[in-house]
Amino acid sequence: MIESTDLWLLRAVHAGESGSLSLGFVLLVTFLGSGWMLLGLVPLFFVPTMRARTGVLLLTLVLTSGIVASAKALAGRVRPCHALGWVRDLPIELPTDPSFPSGHAAGSFAFAAFVFAFHRRAGIALAGIAAAIALSRVALGVHYPSDVAAGAVVGALLGWAGARASPAAVGLANADSEPVGQ
Image (cartoon, rainbow, N blue to C red):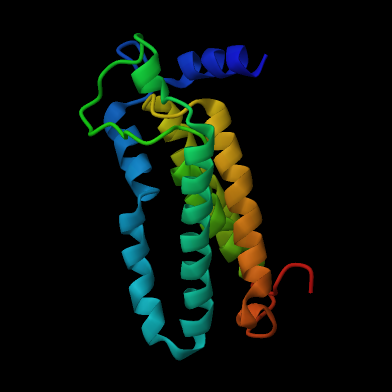
């Protein structure tokens, strides 16, 4: 059942030759979920009130990456771009590691959940971006929908746990950014 649903959704979203999504847009969105975007956190280390929280966020993302890499090694699922003939070649270097779960989805949702714990509005916006990043991985044919769903769940749980473990989880809040659950 999961496999047939995965294939049906993959066909519906994949940005193939007759796909409805613009390949350039999909490539841009998928880039937002790459590790290079973490460079945007560097300036936050120079803001004394943000240093601890940023450090915990970075540690959370590293932990997320490690868990995803371990799960990929255990699952060993072949990516759709390598397993299915109808998934067309893309003008990108295709990943060679296993497909399940999606690291882009896990990292993006971990980031969004972490931010949501401190700033609800920003977290909701980032969750929307994370969903677009996850969808872009399916549109590119490098992940099945269940890969990104699993990555999203793992990432959201780890992001939330990281925020709750953060020493900055208590205090430093105003009416808009009050930590959730406090």
